[in-house]
Length: 220
Image 1 (cartoon, rainbow, N blue to C red):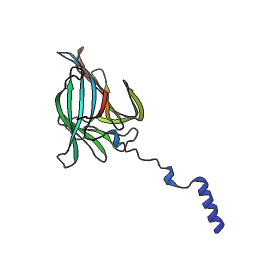
Image 2 (cartoon, rainbow, N blue to C red):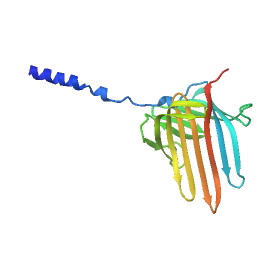
Image 3 (cartoon, helix red, strand yellow):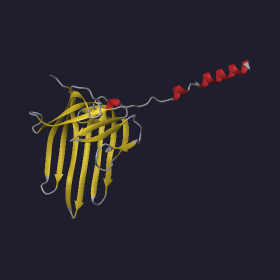
Image 4 (cartoon, one colour):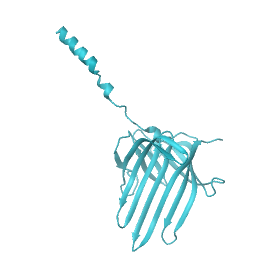
């Protein structure tokens, strides 16, 4: 049996018979949704409202992660103060205070008292989930698009980004298109929301894009 043992040992050595070596590391993706205190992201928002009083607006939004709290179920979350500037950042005024948290398997954000499941961990191509699982709205089936791909927005370059396709419902009456893009170590860097309804030639709804223009640490 000794020659057979050494023959099997030699064969395994040549073929690298170690199953662990063939396993790919799990792409958790936690750093696509940072929750560090004292950071900010500034976005340029382009919005077109359709309806009785159509409106076109361009402005800046700054989201600042301020403090750590415990939410209603005792889990750690952070507050996000949202500021708006109508004059290219010359002056800012507070508009909202949202919260967000990252758990072992999801990234959640509470916007206008509505909780959304923005990301699901670990990251896997074509993984899908209900982004409205924790609110009263109809289910929206989120799905991952491109994962860990480079993207540029204006003068900013990001080596690894993640696309979340939230809605793609287009027919003769409705146009519902929604998506978000996240960057590792930064968070949300792009958002698109198109929610239009066409009835008798009249269009109502909104078409909005939000694009990152700056980010970093808050300087006291």
